Image (cartoon, rainbow, N blue to C red):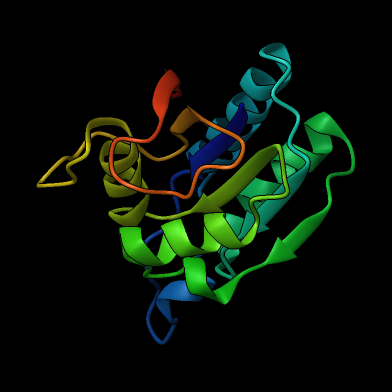
Length: 158
């Protein structure tokens, strides 16, 4: 079995005048949430083989909290995570099938829709992954990402 861990970035500051969305940093609350998420991953012994991170400031800062808690993790910034559909995210996970435990740090609605699609076979209007939330999905090693292929083995939020 392999695992796909989806970590939604923690709370971010609102967009400031003249600022673009991708440059929004974590808020004070968000920094605490990111640290709590990292501690939870460590407590569950969910150390990833690889981490793919959205290029946004808030996702990068969330990923930095993970590395600070877990130690070095091979990490790659993936522009495709930002504003991705569940299909885009599934494709990215499939491209990284060699990682036994893949952690992706990114955004909704793509993350919560991908989790629902992989678990239940439907993404619909599912809403339920708060900032800093983590979904851990388990699937067969050689299986392609497709509807209903995974078991949701853990769901955590700060």
